[in-house]
Image (cartoon, rainbow, N blue to C red; front, side, top):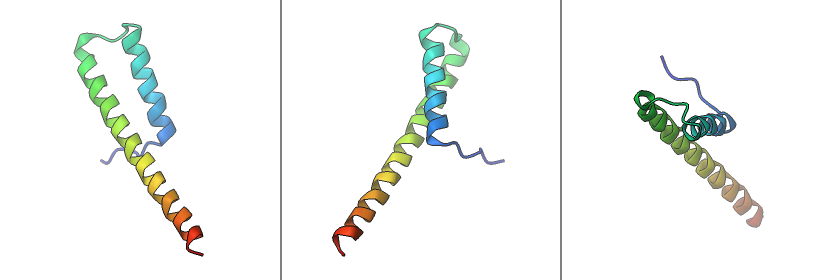
Length: 67
């Protein structure tokens, strides 16, 4: 089953939660790697969303300039 699409804000919130757990040392070594992998995945997804948004904004701005 495919994973539910997560919003940018949800991704940021989950990354912040992972960071908080790590900083508070509330995460055991066994799950640390999985949490780091999840954070890296979420950061990658955020970067993609930001790039997509930037691309769309640039196209919109260009279309205004072309008028």
